Every structure is written in C-alpha cells, then in structure tokens.
Length: 406
Image: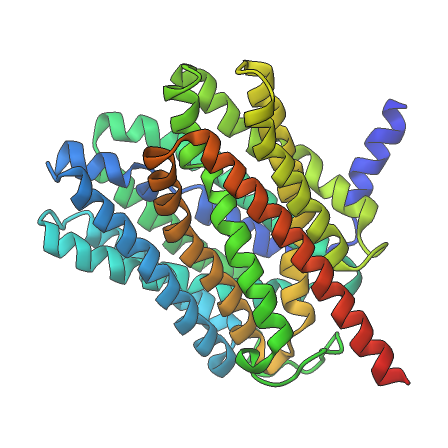
C-alpha cells in the first residue's frame, strides 16, 4: 500500500514541462521573500507610531494598488507579452520594496505602498498567462497546482523568516523582500526561454476570442469569484481573531491552524488534482469546492468549541480550496485566447484583489455589530449560493453548446 501511495505521488508530478517547473522555482524564490505585507500593520503601529485606522488605510491602498496593477498588467501582457511583463514587474516591485523601507511619514508611505502594489501585483496576469503557455492542456490544472505549491511553500518560508528578521530590524524585511523579487527576475531571465508577444503555436481552442469584458459568461464567473473570495479571506483575517477572542486559543495553536492549511496543500493538492483532472468539467470541481467551504464555515457554528472542531474546519476549508482554485484558474484560461489572455487573467486577479479589501472589512463589521456566529452563517450561505450559481453557469454553457451543435 505504501508503494502504491509513493507511486501515485510520483506520478502526480510527472508529465509537467521543464518550463513549468522553472516558473514554479521562480515563484518559490519570489514568495520566499514575502514578509513585508504580513508585518505591515505591526510595522506601521509599533515602529512608525501610526494609529490603527492609519495602518488600515495603508493596507487598503495595497489592495487598491493590486486592483490597478492587475488591470495594467493584463493590458501590458496582451500588448508586449507575458515574458517581458514578468521581468519588469519583478524588478520594479523589488526596487519599490527597498525604497518603501525608507518612507516613514504617513503620506509618503501611502503613496509608496500604492505604487509598490501596482508594480508588484501586475505580475499576476503575466504569470498566469505564462503557466498556460508553457503547459499542455491535459495537465494545465496540475501546472497551476504546482505553482500554488510553490506559493504556499514560499509563504511558509517568508512568514517564518520574517518573524525572526522583524525581531532584529524591520528594515531587513523590505531589503529581503525586494532582493528576492530582483533575484527572481534574474533567475527568470536566465532559465526560461524567451517568448515573444505572439507565440508560434496556440495549444488550445478558445471558447471566446473577443474582449474579456464582453464575455457575459466569464463576467458572471468573475462576479461569483468575487463573492466566494470575499468569504475565503475570512480564513486569514476574521477566523484567527475568532479563535483568540471567542474560543480562547493561544497564538501558538492559531499559528498551527494557519500552517496546517499550507501543509495540506503542499502534500495533498498535486495528488488530488492528478487523480481528478480531466474526469469532469472544471465547473463541476469548482462548485464542489465552494460547497465544502460552506460546510467549513457551518462547522464553526454547529459543533462545540474545541481544537478538534477548529482542525476539522481548517481541513474542510483547505480541501474546498484545493478542489476549487486550481480549476478556477484553468477555467479562466480555457475561455481566453493567446491575444486576450491578459484581459482574462487580469479580471480574475482584480476579483481576488477587490475581495481582499471588501471581505475582511465587511467581515469585521458583521462580527462587531452582530456576532461571529452571524458572520459564519452569512459566508456559509454565500458559498452555497456561489456553488449553485456555478452549477447554473455550467448548465447554461452546456445548453449553448448543444444548441450550437444542433
């Protein structure tokens, strides 16, 4: 049995292109330096003596910059190609991380954070387009899963190292974050083959070759994505507060819960995707994932407060994430063509960036004005509605295909 499991695990990583692995290595290096943003609120309040609302404004500007960056990054990707955009974004983002460490006034840090976010987050659409280009259609979802694995490992390394560096000097966070961005740019330039604005081979047949903003089915998908993402971000914002203030867990156990999410993804997701990829439509797995996330939120209200309940909730949420997110990325690419892929990936990134602002903000107001129980029931309901909406979208798409054949 152990031999079979080992064989399955090895098979899950086979068949991916060399360039897909290179992209994931670049992402791992880049995300291993991610330490400024997780500690930015503490940096603002403890080191720069900003008020908590001022720190909140700084973080909101990072979210706003992410939206603008995704839009600009998508436009540039379509015009100049994903290769150049990744290089420029990594280099400019790295430079801005270092420069932002020297900004100490509220106004200058607000401006610097916004510009930093625009530069840094414009990387996402180009990177998503690159993964699609360097992968094959039959293993595209696994290629995105490998990229997510690199991101999660990088976050784990960056968060751990960032805590040690912050204890020494917060300025080190900006330098390490900036330098890893620049190193990732140099690495990408040296190991990945150049791909111009137009590729010589288009490896997939696009469903829609027009503007993403005119693709009504995709716009509906983006709206659903936004609502689901707003719920999902409660995992990293409101749930830790809930565990501390309501269930009285200590910081060590809360940290373990957050780490458990990344560990399960690291060891399970690739095998899971390998086992199910291609067996059903992308939307089937997306709606299953949304529903599992809904159950995760419901568990917090239905079961008694305990460590077992918390572990169950985070495990369910992680499986919901693994079922949905890789296939959401594949769905995004599936509807695009080479010439408009930046538009599609930009809209997807913008939905997540906007949700990163709206989700935690609305969640905090609901929890404060009503209760955490109310919050969990609301996000549970939204996830169920999102799952149903994906099912309806899947049904409408199938009907359109059948009508077109007739």
